[in-house]
Image (tube, rainbow, N blue to C red; front, side, top):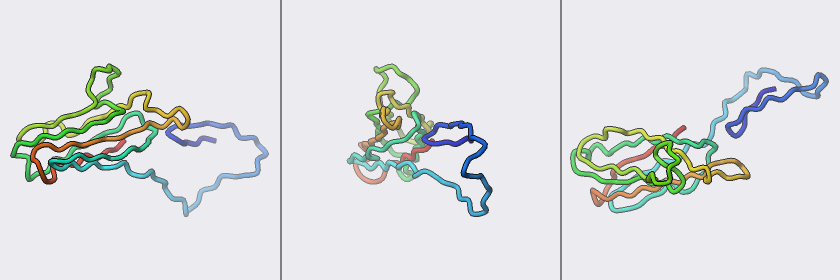
Length: 149
């Protein structure tokens, strides 16, 4: 028998005389995980995804800049206390990505890698949290960051 749980796959040998059987059901449903949070960044304020756990050590971030401000100057940051925006175990690498400029973003996709000490030793899940800080413009919607695997 092969089954997966918590991002791990297990193979177990099943004895010949067991009290269960496998069958295909027309009522079978696909299971899904809860979606990862979205981080909305507004000028003059800070926001957070709140703390959450996930089995993956890496999480993708896609940034969507507000089209109505992209040709004016903007500056905002995305930070994570438990991860880096690149696979790098060097402790001097910053835990943030800053966006500044006028015009469309040249790179909108980043991969965050959690520090090993962000992994809970009991459930083996990684603790994640992302924070956004909008500086310029000083008010209104600046960008959305969506997270995925």
